Length: 232
Image (cartoon, rainbow, N blue to C red; front, side, top):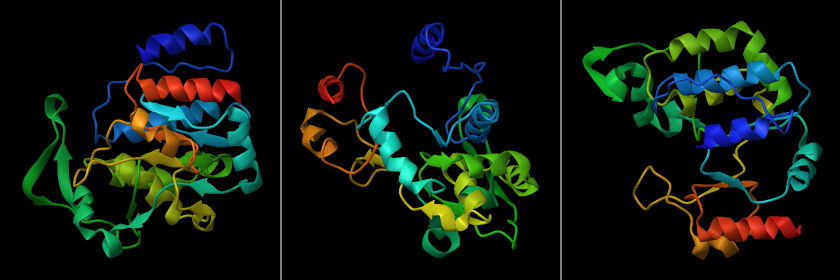
């Protein structure tokens, strides 16, 4: 498994840190808490950007090229941002209804509704991002992100809203670049990304993104990307 491989690599590379496992359900607030826990652990170490990736993500450029892209943009934060009230009002149901997850299933509580803060402008977007150290430190130290976390309790898909809302209501608002630096291809009419294949290789190697998703393990396109990166 991905966790077992990372644990094995951590014995060789001292800069790999494995956090204790936490059960996680898609759409649950735990997804946000896991990211915040990782940021807190890493706060003891020197770094510039926090990049969240899954086991189905893969880099499109080398680590050196990632640094070459990000260093001139130091202080910027890269994530998709949409004003929910103005541009995506149907998504506010994620916050205005109660959502529970019994036995790993997502259920919306009927009839009951809850209010959202009139002092906060709510945003949503992709759950994949690249955040600068300064904003990450703010997430851990300022009372607003902590109070916002309470507002996202019993919500749905908080990982697609918490970080956007936190940064757009903060002094870091002007640092946002509305781009998560990922290449993602969506099934037509679906909210789920499709698996990338060898037919996408040309697009993946000419786009301006740093990472891409989703890939299936041992796919031909992954082998081709690994070979290409090994030559650079």
